[in-house]
Amino acid sequence: DTGVSQDPRHKITKRGQNVTFRCDPISEHNRLYWYRQTLGQGPEFLTYFQNEAQLEKSRLLSDRFSAERPKGSFSTLEIQRTEQGDSAMYLCASSLLRGSQETQYFGPGTRLLVL
Amino acid sequence: QKEVEQDPGPLSVPEGAIVSLNCTYSNSAFQYFMWYRQYSRKGPELLMYTYSSGNKEDGRFTAQVDKSSKYISLFIRDSQPSDSATYLCAMSSDSNYQLIWGAGTKLIIKP
Image (tube, rainbow over all chains, first blue to last red; front, side):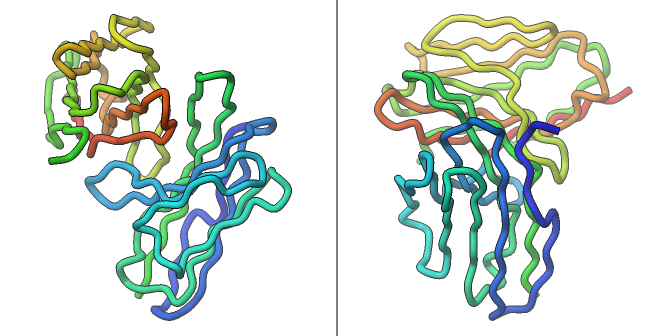
């Protein structure tokens, strides 16, 4: 499968624990995005990378959230000291920016439940 | 007011009907318009991508953009039960590639 993959697909954790999610983008894609989606809403932008550089981070993203893309390939999203309000689907998307054309392809998501 | 408005539905239609899904937006800088389909507990899947105004057709799907009215539509012909999903519109501008999303419309096609 050459699409975007995410791991794990599901995560249940207790409040206060740290969690880390991984995203493997489509090979050769230079941009990688993280989104959060709750029921009945569209995806909410969290952050994105161009190659290994993190270019933008949502103002809504608290300091408990951090993302990395160390070699410009896979990315990790870590949430420290999880709260019940962090329960959501975390989506990763990748794209290849060509001039002004860009299409984002999404992974299956990681569903997080914080108890 | 949200930048992109989309009726959440649910929209329920019989199999074979023509479906019309719509989004309105407020930012005149938007130039790129997308429709994504999302099945329950899955990631969004790109259906249609349109630049600026006009129509684009792909099989049973037609996307329309009317920039003068700040209104976009997705039409599905000969709808099938497998089309039952949530349909999300998304858009962006030349100066900011970040996608702005509608909340999604839940579509149900009854056999």
